[in-house]
Length: 340
Image 1 (cartoon, helix red, strand yellow):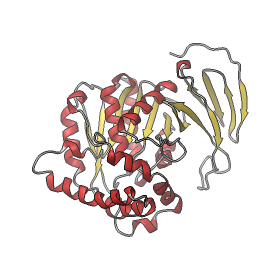
Image 2: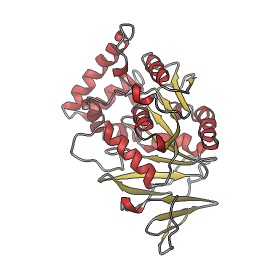
Image 3: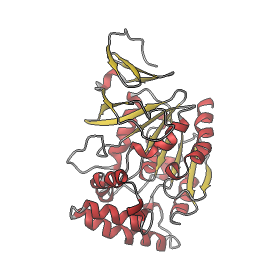
Image 4: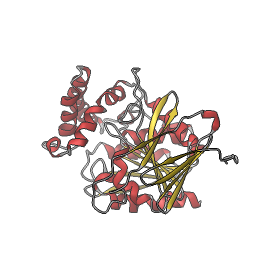
């Protein structure tokens, strides 16, 4: 538990309310809600507040107001994050090419009953990018440190795609931090070593090869478009994406190359995962590539308790395509693991 600290603070005026900070805690007052962001003194983290552009979506609470989004220094890099709501803690881990904004449609729904944290992984969008080769282990270490810095532990973790692999690694490497998780379509290709799965794996590898070639050549925009058209969504999808999302894909392209270069990036230690005992929700969509189902089978075989759900028409990002259903399916697990 956080130790009691004397309030000796700087008052920060924001578009939504006021933020009161001291050496170890921040309380953000926004309309009729408040959120406690606590960080442990031994992290010596620096919080910086930024004003986000107001949302233009009709009916959005922040449509005419600014939202305070702080940064925290973790493991030598500055990570951008956003906190919404009150209640049991949940943290959202985005996949490749994306950022915390991917979770916006569902975070607002979960925040009605949970304190929801979303963040940009290192190297993505508003978080700091280094020149060194990144690794999945760095992402796991960052997630663990962020959970501890904000006093979220134990927390319910939602991970999508590569973020699902990060979530699963955290569950068996730091199980004391994770009271349950929901993962959607982790691309754990290295888990599939049987003859039946070989054609599916080869198909994915064949489609990724030209994407990697473009990334290695520094052609990030062409690589992003090819990935969207041939791997993620299908022909014609790139032109249909909002310009802001296309820009996000291009901006975060170098981090995807890091993931492809990481020899451990698409693997998991299933033997270690057997020691994880908390609730787990494993999901895929009926219109996603078939390779994800056997990957989830392998993961389920290692877990002591897990449940499956298939989204109809949810694709690789049901939290974006079907936010209402994603919240409906996930919320009971987030709340149940807190009560248990």
